[in-house]
Amino acid sequence: MTLEAIAGQFSLEGTVLSIKPLGEGFINDTFTIKTGEGSPDYLLQRKNHLVFPDVPAMMDNIVAVTEHIKKKVADPMRETLTVVDTKDGKHYYKDEDGNYWAVCVFIEGTMSYFTADSPALAREGGIGIGRFQSLLSDFKTPLAEVIKGFHNMRWRFVQWDEALKADKAGRAASLATEIGWIESRREEMMKFQSLVEDGTIPTRVSHNDTKISNILFNASDRSVLCAIDLDTVMSSTVLNDVGDALRSYTNTAAEDEPDLSKVSMSMDMFKAYIEGYLSEAGSFLTPIEKEYLAFSGIFITFEQVLRFLMDYIDGDTYYKIKYPEHNLVRTHSQYSLLESMEAQYEEMKAFVKQF
Ligand code: GN1
Ligand code: MG
Image 1 (spheres, protein in one colour):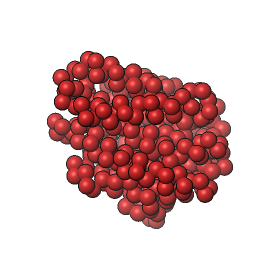
Image 2 (cartoon, rainbow, N blue to C red; image 1 turned 90 degrees about the vertical axis):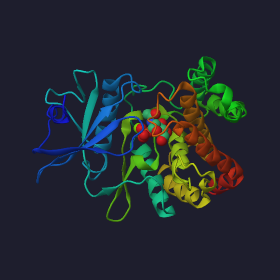
Image 3 (cartoon, rainbow, N blue to C red; image 1 turned 180 degrees about the vertical axis):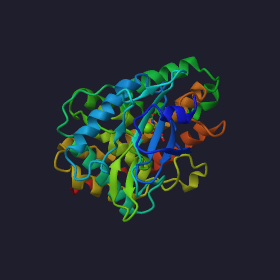
């Protein structure tokens, strides 16, 4: 089926002029649909149903959450995503090959970034996620768990142990050092997981994939507009959002930078992100959540090292790769970031304490 025919399934305004690939998502394939003057442009996505086993439930989550946000903001068409239904009223289209497709309105006058180039941008990013969580703090509808145990370290270690045992690509023997990075931190990470499981750290609606490229900024003044890529919106802890954002905004290099001397955690970016975040979220966070803000960056960066390494061990089945060793390079790069965070942990904690 052509992209034009797929786009034709949705209730679009205007005439489709072109459909072109966009962006660098690791999971889904994204296209921009341009229409004529006077009608909006759109984003068309093929949702990866190997990663998201229940796309209809995921789309229900996204619609529920965005409708909730729309009721509260000044400009509902810009301050969150707008899902466009198919002509027969579904939030997705399933094609003849079993692929799932979804469309949302393209928001004009916005920018997105792959790395934070200034503390001001990091501060805005923090405001964006703090506001997102705050807008959803009274959201009561149960949300589907779109990916089982997404940031659940107990489950990640179950997968990890299985991956090592299966050793599908025959790579484990050559990875003793990297495997050691994971094992030496298992206990520390599980300790945090226990606090989530016993309710010490509360569960709230969170985004779960808050890297900077998943946030839109206004092109005019680089102020934050909204969080996009809502595929992983679920109940988890807000610390997962902060942690994943810290992993992204504070990194002085790209996530897959092969030159490890370029990779480190920027304390300036950390401070700016936390300041922005707490200006919105400070009012609803519990003291224990605040206490773990600095650790959240370490937790999610560790998880990312584990996930990239596990995918390499599995034979590169989850993340899209651009070259054969890509997942291993990502593993090393994220591990350098993790070590840099660990080295600056006391300073991070001391900064958060002032709030
Ligand atoms: C994926 O979907 P995307 O590209 O925004 C992944 C995140 C990882 C990220 C690493 C559903 O994000 O969890 O942190 O890659 N999303 C999923 O860049 O696994
Ligand atoms: Mg995503």
